[in-house]
Amino acid sequence: MIQKNQNNLAISQEFWKKEGKRIDWFTEYTKVNESNFSQGHIEWFSDGILNASYNCIDRHILQGNGNRTALIWQSNDPAVSKKISYQELLDQVCAFSNALKEINIQKGDRVCIYMQMIPEAIVAMLACARIGAIHSVVFGAFSSTALENRINDSQCKALITQDFGIRGLKLDIPMKDNADKILDNCPSIEKVIVVNRSNNSINMQQGRDIFWHDFVMNQPRTCEPEKMNAEDPLFILYTSGSTGKPKGVLHTTGGYLVYTSYTHQKVFDYQQGDIYWCTADIGWITGHSYIVYGPLSNGATQVIFEGVPNYPDFGRFWQIIEQHQVNIFYTAPTALRALMKEGNSWPQRYNLDSLKVLGTVGEPIKSPEWRWYYEIIGQSNCPIVDTWWQTETGGILISPIPHQTELKPGSATHPLPGIFPEILDENQKKIEEANKTGFLVITESWPGQMRTVYGDHQRFIDTYFSQAPGNYFTGDGAYVDEDGYYWITGRVDDVLNVSGHRIGTAEVEGAIGAANGVAEAAVIGYNHEITGEGIYAFVTLMTGIDPSEAIKNDILASVAKIIGPHAKPSVIQFVSGLPKTRSGKIMRRILKKIAQNESDLGDISTLADPSVIDSLLKK
Ligand code: PRX
Image 1 (spheres, rainbow, N blue to C red):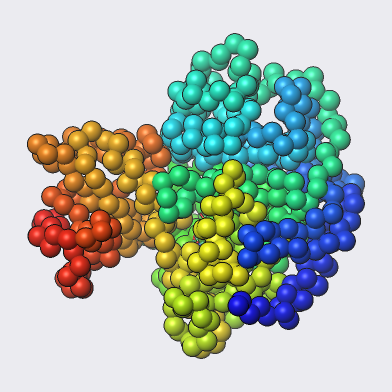
Image 2 (image 1 turned 135 degrees about the vertical axis):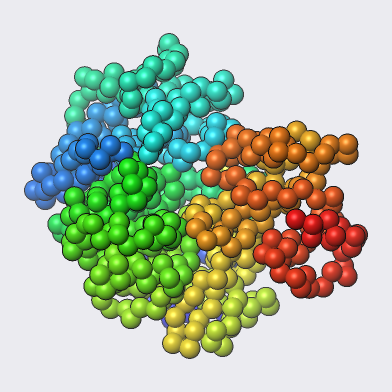
């Protein structure tokens, strides 16, 4: 029998009932939390009616803030930036919404967005939200095949993309061309809308493809926001799990918006007029929650950046902070490690006095980069919020609150008010002891929680509610220290975290297996100085095929083609066999030790064929 803490449930109910009012509802909710973890059922504010785009734009204009800058777009080219006010954002979102309606996109239809960091990407997301269409943003570096799988899984009716992507020295990333390669295999796509970002020519298929500027031309600048139920879907975002098939994480409208608005304000201590900059890409959940829905629902002014941290040089981030007088800066530890390596002279060239709060997300931050961030970037004046959360959680769950929480470098500190985590042992018993690592679970629902895996509710139940019945199972390990601080120790499943990008080992193994000559592959993560985790692949070849550089290149090409370049292994080791148990399960624990050059391989007595160890040790 699951013993729930009724007190926590009551606190949560009261807390969110009040907090839900921070956004505007066309019809106020009377119901708050009707979730039930045992049934895999999540439901919040279920009789409330609202619109996310209205909350992110119209309501600020109605309060007299139409002239306030919503977006400061900094292009890859340091000389080019552009400001977009809330009124201009509304005009563009309405025009695009009307155009979507004209091509028969209706409430509930799925629309795929495959773009880089340009304002049109945000306009497209908000236009979908305005008319009740469900957006599915696919990270711009994903390959054609990854795009195809995601479009087909959710049967998207339209694709919004751009001719070319521009990032750093790459001025011609062929986005439209990538899409063209697979659109014949995506029968659900009726129209393709293409932003003209470069002047290079592309193929446009008559009747199917339309340039963005033609699409919105002559469209009225007003569009009534659709009345959405709180539980109507807002978006799908695919993320990696422990099987080969990415999960379509579904978030709904009311709870998600309340949660992202609440956490953005609370965790970053956002005050009106602050200039906020989150360096994430809209292709990931951080971009959805802390570039689009959180900041815009709070009427924030924010920088969005098309480029990369090392172009034209390693001072780019710091130069942008000075140029746009950024007050709140949110980035990933991997970027900090890469920039720290280049020395202090880069940040010291710029005046960073505008900074008030610094944030990190996506992976554990270790002491050296924490100290560097705190002392060199924040000049020992800015609290660092180390924010722990996941695609599934919709928003930040564990994080310091600026100027309230005493910081400990590397700890995400404490759960936010309204969030109830616990650490469980393998028998699902609560660990009360300090510094003892176990599984991190959340005992009560929160409004930003995902609702289902698109098209596969059973997978939702199996993944998140079966390991520790009655709780949400995060898939992360953690411990609480003697002062009650939470320390996240990393994933406990077969999910890798490379530069803050979440990648499933099974996905990479599948892509390696598709290369010519490969018999089998096993992939593990190993400690990597810059990317946090690196991908190490052990590969066996077909009989008669010898290891060669050519095969290595084929493997890399196959991973780039099936997933994307960010998932390429950094080490490939050819071996004669993989360490397996008698039932055929790969013993990853042994591979991990070999990759990390550990000499004690532990218990190898359960190996079906102990002789494979010799070939594994011959690096
Ligand atoms: O392992 C945790 C790690 O990133 C995972 C979630 O990845 P994703 O869904 O891609 O979302 C990333 C952006 C929220 C988590 O299960 N993670 C995230 N934030 C932290 C973290 N690990 C340690 N510290 C963090 N602050």
